Length: 279
Length: 279
Image (cartoon, rainbow over all chains, first blue to last red):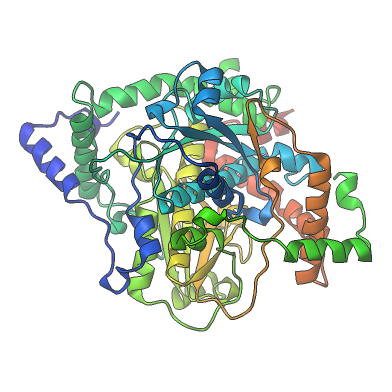
């Protein structure tokens, strides 16, 4: 881990970083500021506090329709949605839906289904996996924006409550997933509880875009961003730290890597991990 | 390739499948049919015919803002956008932007940047790649919906004009991408030319969702879908066929797999492909 991550954050730096987070706003050009649909998209936040209010079937159906109609490479629709209510999640996982949301969907990158119709990805497991993850993520984002349009909120989970990519092996077993079906995230949906959610620290456009050849991000921008990430995490988890959280992820990521490699390349095929073990 | 793909499509089946495509509509529950933002999302289509009309800087900036503010696992923002105008695309690739669109963005799954700040993915190349592709796809979808909200259209490309995942190696070289930066798609943006675009054949919700354990899709639904895919392709490409197009992809996918494995696992590490060669 780099020096940047190990460095402690002083009180002044902490406050300064927090103030920068609190000042974060979408940049909406004045010419398009009255566009309601755009405003829905740019003001979306990941929300983790929900009202104890159910989502009607019609509203949930409209969210799923946004997933169903998402674009996909060659229109292959390589996604599946495992749908849960409060009760069915409890029954399956033995605990409430994370953040006590009323509905959840586990998003699966699924090429198993299209393989029933024809062989779309001959001998190309990594291309197959990549396309499947890409398509399923497009559907996930479309569902999330649709929820926002309907006055709901949501958050995508990769780990909380063993609900996403870092628990792919566990989910495969629990949901009895066949080969070529990989859980990538859970989205939980609900009506947001009152309260203001600041934007998480976002990199400026200049750090994430380029014209012509690839350009490296300005190191000062990355340092500033990392300070804000640490400060934001500390403010919302006073008893923990971003470093501790990342160490927690790191402790799980090895098992997740092995599970994922088995899912993508098959148990029998040598993966880089199993090859390492042979040495 | 399965018998399903090899079977010829008769004239009656062709017409019947086309009619089913033409009848395809988003299912919008009456209770939410007046929701404008939802309507933007559900009526989005991939468009391949554009007006020769430029996109203003403000409008393009709002689209990029939707990408910048997309959600991402642990807020790592593992994406980069390579931005092009008509002129810079021509200069880089020696041909017009596909479908003569006025603007293009190549979406890159990029963990190179965050690696400058700290080691987010210790020894987990496939988890790293999967998270990067997932996040970059979320940004891509958010940009696409924002374009739609602004009255523009777009299409995501994985192959046309050597612009996406199937040409990852070529794009890496052309854009001088460092390690851990993987091009996954190009999005081209423009104002749509008049004309009606039918929905591509979409699987019904019952085929792509389940409650409880994974359930296999009804084979009859898959056969019906495949017939519509073939008919739709034939109607829009009278001189070709879906089968011919898939064979064209198949001819490129082996090279794409090797390039992608090298990008994800590194040249030196054994991948399943290189291990096969050692046998």
